[in-house]
Image 1: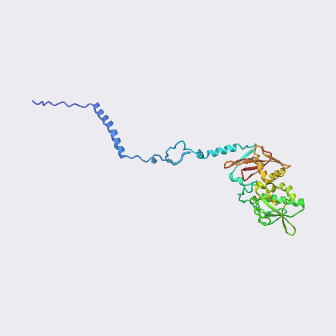
Image 2: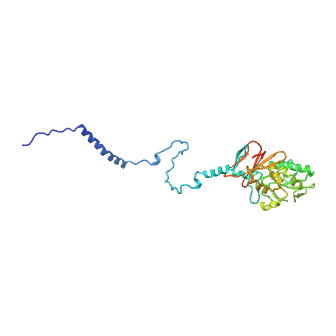
Image 3: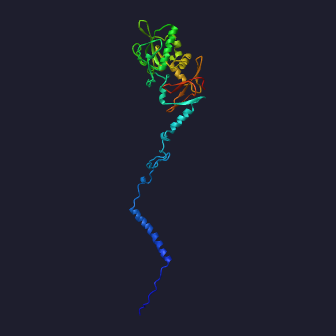
Length: 337
């Protein structure tokens, strides 16, 4: 006989329901994530970060990624810190230059070594200036004649030449001096000497009353004894032909300044040997010169790396000239050091 009694349906408890929901979630999340990854492509790395504006010391563009390099070849001496090695060399060089009391430092560029009235100019050292500061000798005021009024001279040399020729005429009673050439030569002096382009030089001759021109075959006695008083020296002499490679030029005078010319005269030095001497006198051991009314200081500063720090008096007169070779010459009024 078939049992027709219905089984009593069991009701699920609330706790059971929540257990099923939690299990479904734990199983479904990983499956859903895998499905999402299969359909989704991430954006390119370059789109992850964009910088708007600029932070102090930071670039406005994101640098491209580079693979790290091996430690052994990632740095070279030349780019170790973007020029800091050269800066350190310059700082070390300048620290060796003594700055005397009551002096300040001026900075001169590498090109400045080729400017001034004390350039070393010979067969091995050529002139590289431009002569833009020159004036024509037509502005002369001295007691001398000129071969051409278009000849050029630096103003300071022209002023010294005027005073020297007036002194010559007053002392000798002669009025026969002729400036035959300045920046270039020709005619009786068919030699353009290495220092002529500077505008500090004159080639002298004599002219008689009939207008006949005679070259200087030897240095005049008055000029040998007095040219230095006006800042002139004979820049190419027989004594230093071997050093300069230039033959003796007894007619050729060059303006170097009264202080330097005075020291050269007192010590019987040619220009090339005076320039050699100057390299031995730094700010630690300067040269002193007394002209009878004032004391002057002369010292040498070797060129540095790139620009050069040159000590000069904070108050007072001074002049600086490059030597066209290895450094700068400072001449200052007063005793320094």
